[in-house]
Amino acid sequence: MPQLTLAHQRLPGVSVIAVTGEMDATNRGQLESYLRRARTHPSEGLVFDLSRVPFMDSSGLHVLLMCATDCLRNGGAVHLAAVQPLPARLFEVTGVVAHLPVYDTVDAAVSAALNS
Image (cartoon, rainbow, N blue to C red; front, side, top):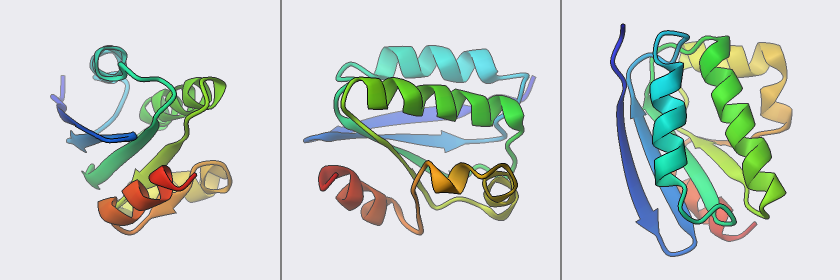
């Protein structure tokens, strides 16, 4: 099973989840468990730093969408940052880019999360 490395940084008003590794069906449970533990303030904005995610399949995408739905339900929003080419293509083909904002940098995503 490919291992994900996950790190969480809580800033005032927004949390940043840095993901390293491939996001797929083999580690979906690991990502879901981590998000349940890390999201202690569901109404805050959430930024996913995807700069070190070279590949994502529909399972990883599903986790992001479920997290975004939960954030919206609680008054927050999900922002994606530094998306690599293969995951970016998945977001484009599936139309996710119309629903989840994507930013070139983590700083830009954090700024947007704080102003939304």
